[in-house]
Image 1 (cartoon, rainbow, N blue to C red):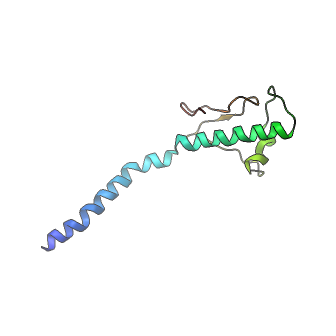
Image 2: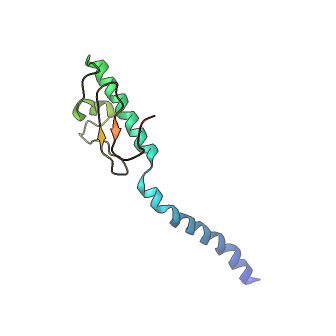
Length: 105
């Protein structure tokens, strides 16, 4: 009876620990949705910058131009959680990430 009680207690705990350990590397990598969200923030910041500064679609902002619209006046640039590098592109063109599959729809 005592052995059965230990089995009932420890088997679920061991299964949960195994699942956490198995999924830990995926959690550390970051996820494409967070990169996509960064790209959306960058796109919105570019559009706001263009509207407020009467810019045309042929102009490419610099990170310093849009940082105030990203609530990052500290000069910190958004980073892809998987190591991709963002490119701002022209106004009206989606920003890009060099990591494969990180693309705005």
